[in-house]
Image 1 (tube, one colour):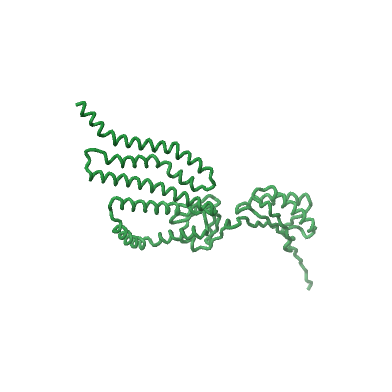
Image 2 (cartoon, helix red, strand yellow):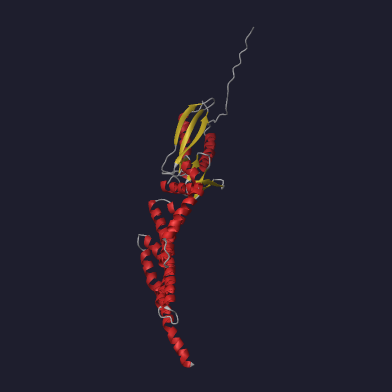
Length: 348
């Protein structure tokens, strides 16, 4: 009986030991070699290697385990060669699946890195992240099926015929999908932009999904617009190119005012606003222009430059407060609307 137990242990010692050694080697590789290489890559200027090392970090031990299990499977007793072949295919399929998941993370990470260098937010949208993952995972699944001995040719043919039927049934959905791709590739709008549609909707682009684009209005309301509508719409993008824009404020003074003095005082107030308000563009001095003889006043226009849309409100508010106070100090009159009526009596 003792001999039988020893023989039993000896028979299974080799495959079990092989698997344990594989797991140990994987842990050692991850703990010492991979961690040291990762520290080296963190010091390089190219960030793509960081993406690769971070993506494979969680799969290293699994890869060593599957490789050692595949080696040990050939020495497992009481299993026929046919079942060993099946086990080997399952192990290889699991390895391919793990590599596919790591490749998916690498692909999305490199896409994000490339977009960051290009100065765009292209893959940060849901549509591109999901599209990249679906393509990589689909290729991995086809490779797994091929490794299992399943012919993928009939599957591809069936998918082609089924895809045609689905495309006809989901015509509007596919139109929105390809419109979303067009929007992203053309950079018509991108997440973070403040846009105004010809329909009157205004807001910050939150996300571009496979079906629709979401805008957040300044009142924090969410507006959902189909991609096909945005693709065909006339869109004013306040953040395209130089996001700074002109801010115009009008003010009227009495006809009795000294316009040279009025312009000088107004310029001093406007320059103080530019200097003190965060939303004002510091390298763009304000401009004061007299532009109209109105019914009861001489009107001036003051032009500021804001850093982005939305900064005009604190600039206008601060300027009106200061100019009203300063005009009172300088005895510069801001007249009420006045209309002179002349009545003539006609004697009979």
